[in-house]
Image (tube, rainbow, N blue to C red; front, side, top):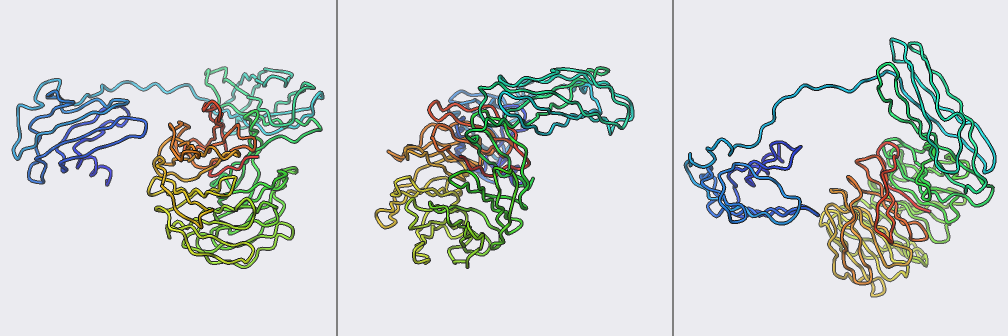
Length: 516
């Protein structure tokens, strides 16, 4: 209802949100400007606007008079509306047969063919130049009648299957497992590949939702470069092969995972579980959680010290941070900082730590040698993500409510520099390994804002998909992985080209991501 009221007070309304036009009404404001990120700007001018003047007398769009009571919304550019308002109706304005907003004739809806059969696929492992087995399941457990299914399997280059297609006849309320023989070329490197299974019900020609077998290739040499996304509502993490874009089987952790930190050798992953007030320790070689460490209330952001000996945790509801000894997995005493601590960044030399306090609009510096908190540094409104440039001289803080990034000169004793405008509701920030570029995720739209850290200037936004949140650069700086929460997916950005990959499906409610 609040959105309805605001639109009407502006004098416009998206009567049909599926199409790009707006109904025109009488504004309550004499002047309104609407700016859509990477879209149009609409300027409404109504000098006579008042609560006792509820009727449109005349309308000009970009200087041209029109009797239409609606207007098409452009993709880009500026659209200026000059609205004349009066206390009584002008019955000659908007009275033509073509002046009313468009209407749509009803049509017969023809649903697509359906089937009760369902595909399900698990995971498989294979060594290069060897063969192995894989399987998937066709289920008709919810079907009251028999179903016949024709299936086909598609493997990426270097992976070979036998058979590649087949047919399954299922009685009502049954399922059948289909077995495949699989081999990999000797040249295949370690990592994940996806074998896609498609199927069609032969009696109705209904297509089943496809399934993907997660195939883990082992070559006996280097381990795969894997990123890990934390699935907040699935209580799992998803491994992502940053070379192939394929994902591995989800790994169970604690309740409501929020953030993660990866050890330098990639063998330990630490996950903060906000709902469980714990840290899950994941063995990435065995692909399972091996320990759980109790910490304070609502753990949020976490960060490892450069030597990997301590994991620092921000306890949002306690207003504290605390360290976990990664050797003993013992949680130390809490240290009070600001209100609702959110994200943590540790200086490259390990001497200082900085934590953003969302409800205090500050950043607290912490001396890790003395274990004491320093004077809070004022930043913007509702600080969220935080990162330190590789040289250790600059701290960058994302202010989610003021839509900008605070720059703090650490070499100058914490001096605040000019803020950098970001997108709408920016959340997290990642800095490239060479310190030249930062990416900021803008949760309220579909963009990532690149920032040139040499000039502290925002560059053209990169569209990635709905509600981007978690973001991380790979250690070589060539790729950035971005969680797109609305799509339950992630994308990978080629940093040199600025190009964006197709969406990679993740688990339920992906939140943050950590990259190798």
